[in-house]
Length: 169
Image (cartoon, rainbow, N blue to C red):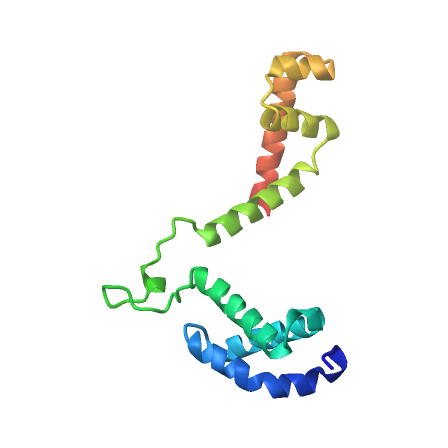
């Protein structure tokens, strides 16, 4: 009887079928293919019922379909394979992104945000409305019920305070 309780015995009995199937699909890494075939075998044990014919034929079909389907998918290429110029593909990769620069830029922004939080609440609001919302001094003044000149003065003083904080640390 085929069931999960005797799966180890069934796996041992059908290993020759697994090896034979893998030999026909030699495109794949052998050890990885064996592990995948064992997973297919476990699925076959769980899905099998006697109306599907003999278990051996059922498993053989499942293995073949699995590896045929896998063969259709593009096979990943290793970056260590030599390209036409003698170097590996990895050596030929060019990236315009500067991860180190991005990291330090983000660190500077974190530092700036921390310093902005140390400003007066009104100055924080002015900076947020001016730089995040791109509002004019006049519009900010309307929102805060202050004159545009007062907004310009507070903005200027807030930037001066930020500059001093940046120079100190």
